[in-house]
Every structure is written in structure tokens, then in C-alpha cells.
Length: 536
Ligand code: GLA
Image (tube, rainbow, N blue to C red; front, side):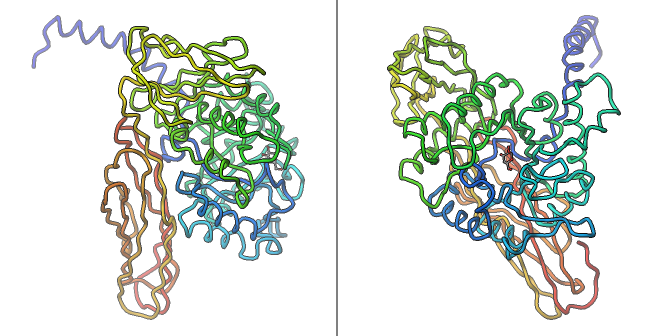
């Protein structure tokens, strides 16, 4: 088609409007998760620190927690990352390499990882950017960044928290760049080096930065990792503190603009189920974390949970707010006396999450108006209470809620009565291990089952091309479950060990957004076969 003058002016005007947008985009920090597809919703799992601190952590504890995670239903609700925190797991050998502490973890750190992967969970570990970890019981990564990240990859780690204790020795890094606050510079450069080391190690790992807000990571860390602590510790081990939890909430709330798919503000591990919290506080705390799209890393003793703790931690409707694929962090839009009205959290189906938290000591009667959620007052909307699981409406103009002290009303407000849940993925195995005894071509098969607890079925998982020639994967769907059938062919393979990481991608059916990528390991041991070569 020929360009008429009018059309040319139209294009020129469009370019004029687009120019600032394009400039803004090119200046926008790169988001690491855009490439690895990890943690596109806030990570969910369990870390021991809040309840246990360092001393009682060992292989037996982690294995018992894995059993409890599965039997309590937490795994099915989406809690998948699990492992020791500063659990005195490794030391540095004379050769500079990390070695597992076999006295505490007799299977070694790779063995512990295999145990965790077997039932379809993901493996989380911990280290520090400085010379030693916080208690000084373990070596930090300073000056060993590349070899340590290679060790974490070899242990098959899927999630790594990197603390910021004993980092004085890293100050020299700040000499290389100008115009950045000294703290910011040290922290940003040290963590960027660790990111580079992780990328060099070649394993997809969720990177959890833990500088407790030092260096203001919300300004730069989206290109480095997937989540960053915004605050100091939420409690001392074993001592849940409501006032510290509220302090962390207040600090984290202000940073809402920095959060999004694959880059999250982290106000610390959950304190749900710990001694000293009432049932009301447990519910309110969980609601606040969900409203802030915070990582949901439980940190209580899963082996002795009350029915009420389990009910709170597995409330799928609340989890659906946290795991919403748009990844918006809600914030306080208005205060009425001691009551806070949290909104600004549009969800994937066009509905809105609203939280009323009563920080006062007397019951609060609060009128939530439709203008609080950016809607016209004349709209007729349904309201779903995510703790009573009741829908009312349609309401016009707003809704009045009465909230007891320290309690919440966690609501979802929508034009439609449907209130669909976003997908939360549960897998039956993230690790397949094959053995081909003796020579000769053989075909071996193994499956990974993935199910969603969301309202809608998912499209077929798409396996990324580039698998080694000995492995092929086919996907089939049975409603909300899908099977990834793995076929291993040993024809032409030499004796040896083979390993592949499979990546599959999917999109969220309502919003069409990409979902966190699914990764799993496939191991093959060929003993005694002849010919071919190892393509590890
Ligand atoms: C720091 C972190 C905690 C925990 C301890 C371990 O304090 O903030 O979450 O990992 O270190 O020593």
C-alpha cells in the first residue's frame, strides 16, 4: 500500500507518542526472571530459621519436615521450596571447595537434595556474601563466588538465599563506579558478582537476596535476583513478635511499586504457627503477606501444627491473591482511625483484592467505597470474603465491614460472581533417575505429573527444544493434570553418567501471561554399554 500524506502524518504522530515510551523502556532495568522464567509468582515453601534458628537443623529435621509438608497438605497448596537455612551444612576444604557437613547431613548436600526432589519438591539452601555466615559457623562466598555457585549447582539447588553478614571485606568493590551511595554500591556489586557466578554455573536457581534492606535492593535487584529482603529479621528464633511483624509490614508496604512477576519485595519468612500469636493475628499476618504479594515461606514446626494453622496456611483463596499472575503488591490507600484500607491490587480476572486491617484495640466499622478500588460508585459489584468463603451482592457504592481488633476483612470485589483461582502448580516429581544396566540399546520411561489447583485447566506445557539426543519428552493432558512422559534411549551411548535439565513453559489461561517455568532434572547412568560418547 502507498503512503498517503495523511497516513505519513499518522505514523509520524504515533512515533512521537511512542518515543518517550521506547526511551523509558530502554532505561528500565532488565528483569532477570524475564530470561529464566523463575518465580513469576512469589516463591512458596519452608525455611527453618524463625522457629529453629541454627542449632537443631540437620538431615533428620529436614526429612521430617518434608514428610509433614506433604501429609499436612501444604505441598498441595503450593509450598515447594524446602531446605536448611544457616543449618551448619558445609565447610570449606583445604582446596578451597565447599564440602557437606556429613556429621549433620549424612547423605551429603546432594543426597539431601535428591530426597527433597523425589516427591516433587524443590531444594533451598543458604549462604552469605561475606567472609562467614552470620553466626560465623559456615564460610561465606567472598572471593569464592564462582566455585561456590558451582557447588550449589552440583548439589542441585533450586533456591538460594544469600545473606549479608561479615561483608566488610567487600568494600573495595565500591572503587569502580561513581555516583552511587556507598552502601548501595557495595551491595549491588557484590550481589551482581554472585548473579554472574550463578549464571556461569548454568543451573536455574531462584536468587533470594538478604541484605535486610541495606543498599536499597528494590532499586536495582530485579536484574540480579528474584526477591530481596526489605527489612531486618522478623523475629529471633523461636520468639514470634507481633510488633516486629507490624514494623516489617510498614516498611515493606511503602515499596509496592518495585514488586512484580519475578522480582519481589520480601518482608521475611512467615511467623504463622509459632507460639505467641493468636488465631486472629495468624489470619491477619497471612492476609497482609498475601496482599503484599510477599513470598510465602513458612518457618514454623510443621510437625506439630494445629488444625487452625493448617487451615490458615492452606487457604487457597488467600493464596490466590498472593499468587496472582499480575504480581501487583497492594498498599494502604486510606486510613479510618486505626483501620487501614489496603487496595491497588488488581487481579488476573479483573477483580480487585481489598484488605481492611484493624490495628486498634476496639472493633472498627469501615466503609469500603468503590472509589477505593478505582471503580465508579454506581457499579453493582459482588464481594467475596476470603476467610468466610461467602459471596454477597451485588452492592452499589461500597460495603461496610466490622472488623474486631487485630483482625482483617480480606475481600475480593468483582463485576462477576465467578471469582476464579489462578493456577498454583503442584508436581509429583521434579527429578527422574534412570539406570541402564549392561550393554545394548534400551528404552526407559518415567513421568512427571503436574497439576494445577486453579479454577481453569492449563494449556499443554511446552517443552523447550535443545534436549540431548538420548531424551525425549511428550506431554499429555487429563483435565487439570498433565503428564510429562520422559523417554530415555541408550542406543549409541557410552558407559557413563548423563544429566539433563528439562524446562517447560506455560501461560496462565485467563490473563495469557507466562507462568513460572517448570524445571526438572533427568539423570541417566549407563553401565557397560559400548560405543558413542557422553554428551553431558
Ligand atoms: C540473617 C537472616 C535470617 C537468617 C539468619 C541466619 O539474620 O536475615 O533470615 O537467615 O541470618 O543466621
